[in-house]
Image (cartoon, rainbow over all chains, first blue to last red; front, top):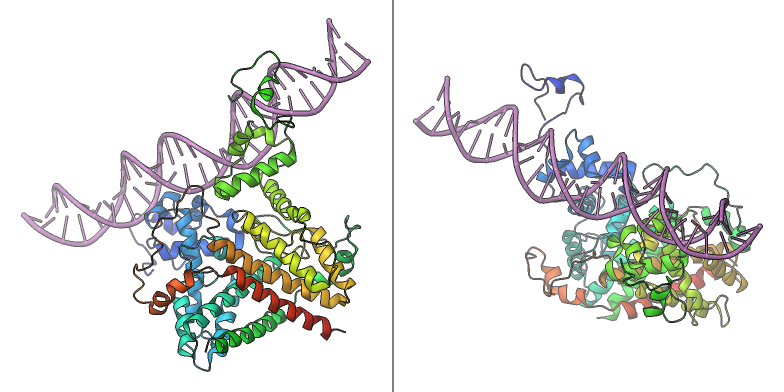
Length: 245
Length: 245
DNA sequence: TACGTGGGTTTACGTTGTAAGTCACCGGGC
DNA sequence: GCCCGGTGACTTACAACGTAAACCCACGTA
């Protein structure tokens, strides 16, 4: 940043009407990816185009291609970037300190925080093809996979038990968070507003149970369900651990 | 193109070489949706365009719009269509017969069969926005939601218990099947072949655990994991059931 | 024979991702 | 001072997409 005021030089138009303080340094990959995340966060994945993304960065679409090979690759970068946010999450540890349960609890909550922080981005984590079978969503970063496996084996898990735990853990997180984020109004396109009517009584006469339970079904108990399911998962993992001794 | 020689009457080509009895009558929504599913099955979602889909149906792209409002709507139709396949699945019951455990077992396996039959389509089930909070993926059909809820309440579940079970059930299925289908090579684009090398030893020196466990991680134990997790889920649901008595 | 209409085609437009070429500036050797 | 390569943006161009609108033609019916 820095060169706030420009005296004489050619950037007169910049002086005219731009973002006041920070401003027009050069582009770089990180800034692009961050802008993409912000864009998806508020306009949805469908609304993200190279031209528009260039737009918010004050730049022509083609300029992005100097730093990003293409849109697909950019989306990949987006998913790894949001998972990287967990590295600055104080609650998440990179290796067990107070036992593996605590370790996994923190990790799970970290992922959940990421998902809730970016509900429109999170489905990408699941739908992007993984380039390797060990990079299961939503833990799509070698760093975290390594942390997971190493963490558990250091806590007395056999190799097989660690792998089994990894599978169960990812499967649980993916399912729960995807649904939580979806009900939270996730993937809705760029500009569609949900009509004010939360009501249901349209043509579901033939579905009496749904009709009767509709209200209960609409309630959002994600948080407690998450805790309970996670607790249950940890029990199962404890079992896996003890079985392979 | 296509209808190379036309005799006198236009139906000559039909006589020539079509599906024996039914054949190239007019288009209709069902045929279009079926073609879309087949197309995605073998070329991936990314490859599906209105023009190409018209192509395989021997018709111009715009003709589809007489039966389908647009691509988005078509994709929605695709997901409800594949979930409808379960209705012809003999193993799946539409109401409990030998207890709710059996009922849910059959339902779960039915969904799994659908997912495995259409690995490239299944992610759509998760990523399409649900128009109502009670239509949680992957059970994205009122028919099945009703069957689920009614089935459980008829087996002595309280309303709350049925709803809780529904949430746990969908969340489990979604997570597990999405991952199973993903490792099975799901969303890969239209024409990218996975390179023959299944090996891993590229640049993951800093990840010793991943390196060591890579082989184990690549193994596919989805089937048994599915059974075990499902068993565990049913236990949890039994608990939910008894708690709210 | 005339007609309306259902089912398909043609044409056209705006938007997308991206390959290729171009131009403006800037810092460093003579 | 001058030149000059390189970097970082812009411009142009193209094929493909989704889809609106107009059209066209063969048919069943009157």
